[in-house]
Image (cartoon, rainbow, N blue to C red; front, side):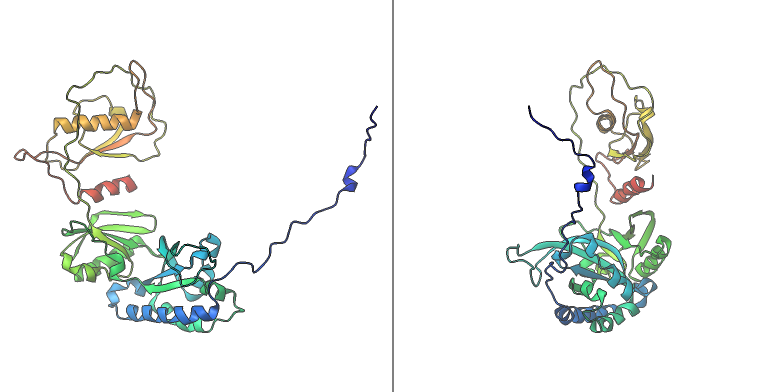
Length: 369
């Protein structure tokens, strides 16, 4: 018979085991502080030359925006150079991912090009003017020096960075995205930009503006020849042609199928999501009234086109209920929808009349409704 021992107070036999200590200083840094100063300080000075040449009206509250690119070795959020920006007097107003070829890699077996973070940093021209002196006075003992050494490039935002006109039907109506500084107000930025745009020969249409995150989008109208001057406004993120709606006739069945089904009872599951459908409209009589929150006519003078309203009804039904089984009850929709009739027909026209400026109206409704 096997003897089994019972051990009392076994916790006395235990002892603590410390976790392995994290080795400090193991991360390979691509540049020393001296190397970073030698490359980045002249880039900052060149950017300041660009900023000082700008007219006063182009710099809202004397603000300028620069592009600060971090080395790909510092993609983690913990490497965000907050201490550096705070001490200089700059703030981040946005970012994007870029593929670059860094001056030096931290590992031997790495791709030639790598993704990294490009920060859009804003500050007064005075603060940016003090940046080179601040950088030259850094030493290895300062915590902020390591953040400075992470910079891959530093450059001023220029009209070439903001204009996106390639391969587009330019026209004379444009969409402009404007940075909103952390301490700034959309109304102030709009006023500064409208005043500057007027000097450049452009008219700002405030009816179609909307905010998305820390960006304010506005519609402007003017001659394409003045876009480069317009894009010198320092808080501009992007200038691009207003997208056009395509006047494509929808495909519908020549022999409609009658499928008997029942509508669900009760309200949609939520009223929170904002869903907009841009299509050919809805027939004057239909069974979806309880699920269409609002109905818009982009051109109130245009009349319905039966094929288009049939298509719009089908699309709206598909968004609300998805596939419906014959003789079954449709599922409750997740949310009601807003339907925008974006195409119609004038009494004297045989073709559609899409408007170039409709795009902003629908995007506005998606954000503000």
